[in-house]
Image (tube, rainbow over all chains, first blue to last red; front, side, top):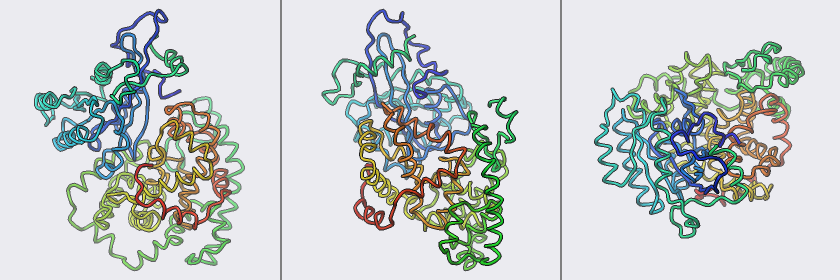
Length: 221
Length: 332
C-alpha cells in the first residue's frame, strides 16, 4: 500500500529500534489534522513525512487530502491517519469535519508571514473550543530554511506555544528539518494505553489482528 | 521515466498540451488506442468542418450536434465551439469592453496576493505554462473583481489555466470561466460554498440508491465524500483526470450543463465498484481515489470512459428532486 510504504520516509530514523519479533508490539492509530493558512506548507510537511519528497511548487489542496504514515516508538507502532486540509478561508466550513474526533493537530504557519501566525492562533482557539478536550496540538513554524528573512521570531512563537500548552517546533519541509521530529513528539505525547478509546479520551485505537500483522510488516525492521 | 517504452514509442513524454506524462504512463496501450483513435479524429474533423460551414453560429444544439459533441470536438475548433455552444460568445458580444475595462481597474491587494500565491503552483509540470502565468493572473484577477460574491476561489486557477491552454486567448478564457462559475455550477465557489455542499450530498444520495454496498463500504471505512469528491466538483475534473479526458468532458459540459458533472462522478464510482469494495482500509481507499483511479485505461483511452458515462441512466428531474432534499447539508 503506497501510502504506508516506508519509501524514503525515514520517519523511524530517530526512534529506538529493537530486534524484530522478540516481543509483542503495541499498535495504535491516531487521527491527526493539519490546519493553517493557505501556502504555509501543510501539504509539503505531509509529503515530506509520508514520502520523503519535496516539491518547490506543491499544488494547492482543494477540499482535503488523506494519507497515512507509520512510525515506531520503543515497543509501539503508531499509525497516523493524516487529514490535510485546504487553507483558503472559504474552505473553513469543511474543517470541523476533519478535526472532529482528531487526537492530534498540527497548526502550521509560515515564519515569513505574520498574518499566517495570527491565523494559526485563531485555529488554536477554535480547536480548544470545538475539538476533543484532550487533543494534542503542535504548532509548526514552517519554512525555517528561510530564517534569514523571518518576521515571526522564534521566541515569540515559543512563548505563545508554552502559554497555550502546545508542542512547538520550527520546521522545514524543504530540508526535512524537524519534520519527522514533530510527528514523533506528538506520538510520544499521545496516550497509548489499551482500550482508552472507550472513554472518548484522545487515545489511539488498538488495531485488530489483521491490521496488526500488516503493520509489523512495514515497520520496526 | 521508462526509457524502453519511450524509445519504442512514437509518443513523446510530454503530451500535446504540454503536460508531462507520468513515469508509469502505459505507452504500449496508448499507442494501440491511438492507432485507431487517430483515424477517428481525422474523420471527425472532416465532419466538423462540414457542420461549421452549414451552421456557423451553432445556436441550436440538435440531437445530431449533441452526438458529435459527445464524440469529441476536434482540438483546432474547440475554443470557438465552446464559446458558441455555451452562449459565452453572445455574452461577450453584448459587453465587448468588459474584460478590458476590468483589467484597467484598481485591484484589491488581498485578492492579488491570494492569486499570486497560486500562480507558480498551477500546472508546474506543464512545459508551456511558465509563459502563460501573467495571462492567467489577468483572467483570475479580472474575474475576482467582476464577481465579488466569488472573488478568488482556489481551484479556479486550474479551470482558468486549462481554458487558457485550450483557447490561448485571455478574453475567451474569462468568458468561459464566467460561464462555468455562474451558469454551470453556480454557488460552488462562493464564500459559503453552499451548492457545492448540497451537490456533494446529492452525489452521496445517488450512490446510496444505485450502489448501496459501495456507499456502506465507504462509510464503514470512514472516508467522507468531501475528501473524495470536493476537487472533482470544484475543478470540474481539471487537475483530477487526464487532460484529454477532461477536455472531452468539458465539450459535453458546455453543451449539456451540470448534469455531465454528476455523470462523470457516477461513472468514476460505478466503473471502479470492484476496486472500491476491494479496499480493506481507509488508506487503501484514499489511495485508490487519489492515484490508482487516475492510471491505466482512464488515461490511455478517454473514449471508452466517455462512452461508459453516457450508458448511465440519469434524469435531470432526479437530480433536481435530490437537490431539494439535500439543501443545507454540510457533513457529507
